[in-house]
Image (tube, rainbow, N blue to C red; front, top):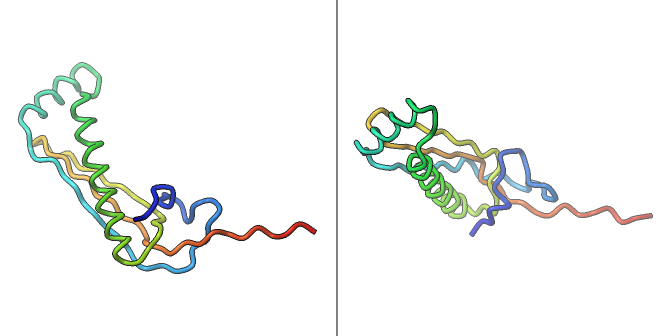
Length: 116
């Protein structure tokens, strides 16, 4: 399984170098429509805040999405994902869709140069 520290939004994790790129890994997770969620979201917007239930559902969808992305990258033989990007869509029906993508890569630790 790929360690969370090996999943980054930039081109490589600190202390590692990319040895080989294995292609894009993409995943999606969603939460079903909920009329109650829409109502709470509308009230929260009118009050100028974000409903904690909506934030919680989005966070759960994001966590599921990351887990699926890591499984796909692992299946490709990767030990890391670089260039991680998220897209979140909340249609008016109360559903939540989160998509993640990144480059599945093989990483190896950078070797420190010996002191002279």
